[in-house]
Length: 126
Image (cartoon, rainbow, N blue to C red):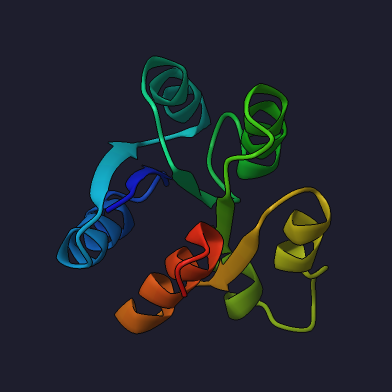
């Protein structure tokens, strides 16, 4: 069982991820934006972070940069639905996240088994 911090501005996405990962026997902590996520990260001990790239205020790229400064060894799973909705018209933000330090990436919307598999890959258990 891993302790996972989920940072996403959409409540429905946070709760869905929490349910899926709890069913996979993980302990999940939720944060509604980058600033709250960094505060939770500093206050707790986590095995990995699941991070949305596009959020108001501090976006996921800045949040990931700060997480990497604090704990470069902690795996980060970066997620975005922006690319899926506007395919072909924009840069590949998930590819950029990988180049900036994300351990793995996941396009929204995703299936529960895709999330569980990506988390297992990040944790080195899958």
